[in-house]
Amino acid sequence: MVCFSALVLAGTLYVLRSLSGSVDLHLTERLNTLDFSDVLPERKIDEIPIQRSEVTWMPPSVTFASATPSPAGGEVHLTFGGTIAAETTVRQSGYYSDSRRYDFSEILSLLSDEISSDFSMAVMENLVMPDAKVSDLIVPEAIMGMLSSGKMNAVALGFGKIYDKGFEGLISTVQSAQSRGLQVLGAYMNEGEAALSNRIMEIGNVKFAVLHYTETLSSTGNKSIRKDGNSFAVPLLDQADQDIALVRSMGAQVVIVSVNWGTAGKTAVTSSQKKQAERLCAAGADVIIGNGPRRVQNIERITALGADGKEHSALCAYSLGCMLSSSTKTAALQSILLHVDISVDVNDHVSVRATYTPVYIWRYKQENVTRFRLLAANGTVPDGMTSDQQKKMASAAATVGTILKDAAAAPRK
Image (cartoon, rainbow, N blue to C red):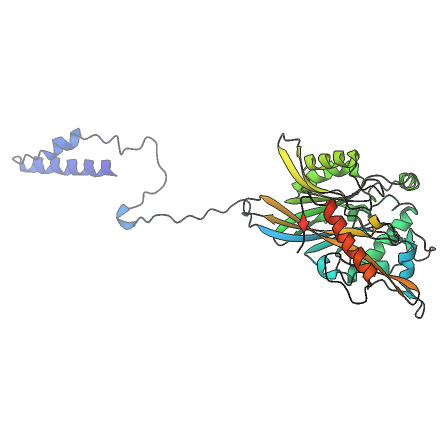
């Protein structure tokens, strides 16, 4: 455009000069010597040029959309209980002859405030089969009502004998729990229910996964599940490594692994438990919660080298003890509720803090029937408790305190 204007001007001057003869305009010479290389295009431009006089330039205002939303951070509060084994004496305690019905709803009534949290879970080592004869293994369906009325959200059913009555026994037990509104872990009726995506929850803006595994099945259960081909029904501990990686890939910020392992009646953590815990930690578990020994065992923070060559740490509670059983052994009268407070900051950094409530199994006689109540061993003494029972309750709190004196968890106030 500039070039075109210059040529027009030069032509006009030339005509004027020719017409006037005496007019000497030096602009023509100067225009002939101008260098237009800065403004001449090197190639043809098809777009129509914009008239600068018609444009008022303003700084652009640009908003960039993020491909993934920024983490907002949050926190979630979880509570885990020990093993529930509703053996003969426990079962009989829930039977009321006048109505000929079972009712276990009062057993957790004194502990429900401590159980209540964003998510709470206990482990049950029983089967529910309404048409089968009751025993130490098979219990009335009403036992599930004890958990739901006691503010439990979920129950882990994976244990050594979960498949001892075949697939029928597992299905009946799972359905009983689900009918009470309980989420079931560790035992599944079909591959859809067993899908890992069902183990991921989001509460308090924290996305976390709770996985439950059984270390080994009994010989009876092992033969039966192999014959049926239902490998999905009971997740075994050997598959935990790959599952942890998968739920991470699905977006779980925190991974909690519950496992039924160890030796019943063993107060000391075994070398096998330690080895398995290190493996789970290396795989990426943030919290490991053990049940099976039916005794309170230590809680510690462990570290292990992951497959990526980075060191990973996890909180490991090797065994929460026996929350409810018929055993009268002193070591079986106490367990703990483990309270896990998890926070995730805006940079996706996970922080885990743990406290515990010592739990005492209170037994008392009512109309010649032994009744059971679970309560905080370091809490208020309930009305009607004898002096002998008060001493046992205090002893339970002291025993748990001794076991966990150097633990990575403090008593809950």
